[in-house]
Image (cartoon, rainbow, N blue to C red; front, top):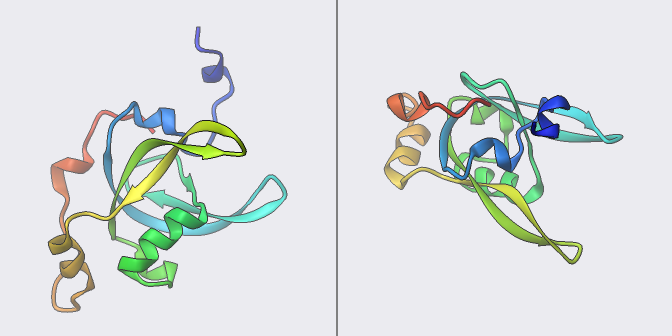
Length: 127
């Protein structure tokens, strides 16, 4: 038995990605109380869990889609697990990549709708 399954979290963890990159579309971003602090949580279309955003991920998204999180709705990003050094320990975390530039330009162009990421969003990862 995996003991962590007995204590499910409403927030995405690196292990939820099962070692894979996952393309998602942002549904909304909201501020939530996480450990006594208000932090941004990014929710995705057709996914239950939200990603508690850190500064690194927020800046990566803002560089491509702007600082106004309301404008991130419908934007595509790629989530991937990686390891980082944190307080002297190597821990697994989630980082964000932006899809290929053509997708980003289509989203930023007012004449074009957000990119259709179609089948890439319909994967078997259960978060």
